[in-house]
Length: 203
Length: 375
Image (cartoon, rainbow over all chains, first blue to last red; front, top):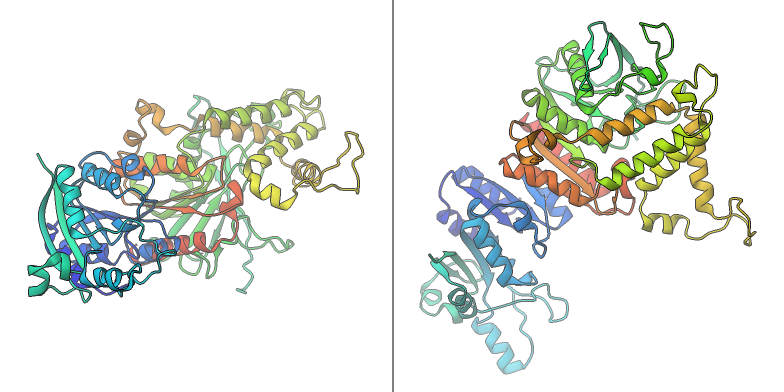
């Protein structure tokens, strides 16, 4: 199993004990397993990768092999089936992040989502000074082989929420060591590398 | 290579009558079964395997005189995903079969003659009821798991629905919640092939000292086709010819024709499968529809189940496609059941559930290890 990163700890803080949780792109099930141990949650993971499916099963997680680009969420779950739908670092790899968000908000009462910030100063600097697509520790791929096809900045994401009647309940920003500091709090879109958002439908 | 596991079948004779779903009654019956491994002290490590349409109780290991292992030997045995060093594995032959349990080739105790077409139509539920008698006989209060592929997977679901507290885990592999119109249509063509064979004699072919070989072979050829995928057949045979050039005749010309004829022939002669059994098994498949009693609501059908489920499908299986397995998963999720689902990438069609595959084996093993650990 992977280690519990500060990102996972922050998510854990946001999860109510005994709640019903769905983790999209659950990988080897580290987070769900941790939530089971520390928050006594019930829930499922969804994961497309065959090897990670096996690992998740080994880690005692109920995992549904599934493609987030398909209509699986709506096929499998009724509206408001979950207290929390979590998706860590996967928003940028799906074909239509806006539609997936909509589906997540349908089946979950609250959504917890994390993604890398394309507005971080290192990205801006590389594009500005080198005139090339940025490569960083958080986003180490070349432009042509990256799975990250829908990168956005924190500001972009918040615009999307605004346009789609989504309420931001809480947010946290961490750097690449997944730590929060004064800089990331003051200028998140410039200094934060990974964002965590807790969102829900506006009534 | 693990040690060769030698097995011999056992027979449970049940003298109490079995009331069948159809309303008919079997006055008495035999169930032939095999076991592997040891039942532990609190009888908590028992696993039941349910076989597919033409399968039998010989799921793993070898018979003394035979070089070919049981039909699911890839996955069941010492050190295998269903590890017989850990689990006490039981597999019984379904009623209506021709492999030892009471069926059309058995003697009807009332007439003293072979049952033939008089053997009553049996359903999945009847099989489960008879296996429940075997469970009691073996001193098992609750199965750690019941596992089955294809028709066997349907039997697993029937167990979970009918005897919710008698199993902790249900492994439903390459199955469907019911047959589609196309599935039933294929079965009907197979049955017509058998019943229109002049040697069928209204099912009394044993008394007439013959067998409807041609019809049975045709039925098997058709069935076999539905177990394979288009891609795999393309890769295996393509348009390869048996001789160098086209003969412009109705002889066997393409390799695929030869292969199918061989499969049909083998089934009807060498394997000596009984035509009445084939009819009965296809009918049992057609009738399987647990949602029917619940206003066609599969979720309602699963409402009383208690078992945790693992559902597995194979990408190129068009007989019981992944979409059919996802229906099962959806219904279980509706009930907040503990369920995991794997969709295995394979080019081998429906048959994939019997064949080696790293992902499939990984999933199977991981799940069985969880049962071992958590009980």
